[in-house]
Amino acid sequence: MEKKKEPLLVVNKLEVVYFHVSTAIQGVSFQVSEGQIFAIIGANGAGKTTTLRTISGFLGSDNAYITDGEVRFMGERLNDFSPYKITSKGIALVPERNKVFETLTTEENLAISVSRTGTQKEMERKIYEYFPKLYERRKHLAGLLSGGERQMLAMGQALLCSPKLLLVDELSLGLAPLIVTHLIQTLMKMKQDLGLTLLMVEQNAAVALRIADYAAVMENGRIVFDGTPQKLMGHQDVREFYLGLHESGEKSYRDIKQYRRSRRWWG
Image 1 (cartoon, rainbow, N blue to C red):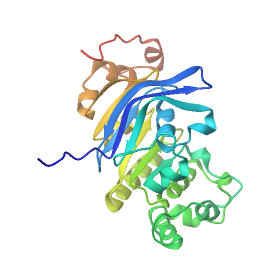
Image 2 (cartoon, rainbow, N blue to C red):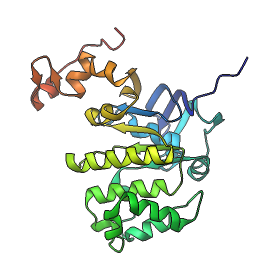
Image 3 (cartoon, rainbow, N blue to C red):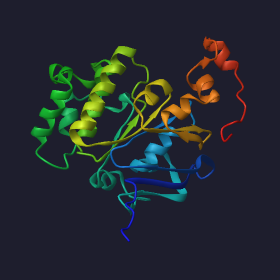
Image 4 (cartoon, rainbow, N blue to C red):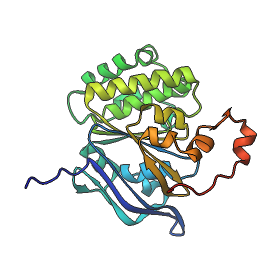
C-alpha cells in the first residue's frame, strides 16, 4: 500500500512559554498542505504571531521556549532549529512591516537578504517586477517609506529566500483598504507564479477569509474553531465578533466591544 503523503507543515500539540512562567500558546495543532492558503484569525494577543515565530525559529530572541509538542516541515522536526537553518529548509517569515532596517535604503535591505537559489540580482529583479514602487524608491531609506511600501519591502526580503512556505504576519495591519487589496493581489500572483504555500495570521478576518482555503480561530493561545471560510463565515460567533455582523447588518464598535459571545465553538 502506498504511504500517505504527510502535509507540508504539521504543528502538533504545541506549547510555548515566555520567561519560563507565562504560557503563550497551549495545545495548538493544525496542518498545512502543499499549495494551500491557511489563515489563523484572532484578536491582538491571541497567540497568532507567537505561532509564526515558533515555526520560523525566532522565539529565542523573545525569551520564549517550546515546552511541549513539535513543528514538522516536510517530515522533519524543526524544534530548536535556528532561524537561519529553518530558512534554509524553505520557510520564510514576512514580519510586520516595521521590522525592516530603517537606516538602510530599499536596495540595501534587499541586498542583505540571503537568496537560497539563483543569483541575488535575478531575485531582486523579480521583486521589482512584483513591486515597481520599490524600484522607484530603491535609493530611499526604508524609514522614509510609507506603510504600504514597507510591507512590500518585507515581502520582497522574504521572497529572496526562495521559500516553499511563506509565513505572513498581519499583512493588512494599519494599511488603507486600497493598499491591502493591492498587496493581496500581488501575494496571490506570487503564490501562483512561484508555487508557494501560505500560512497567514490576521486580525482582519474579512481579508483572511476572502482568500484562505482553510482557517482557524485562535483565542487565548488555543485554536477554538476551524474549517473552510464558508464554515467560519456561517458561524454566528465568527460573524458577530470577528466580522462585526449580525442578522440585521453591521454592528457599531460599541456593540462589538460589549458583545459577550457564548461558548458555542464546538456545537
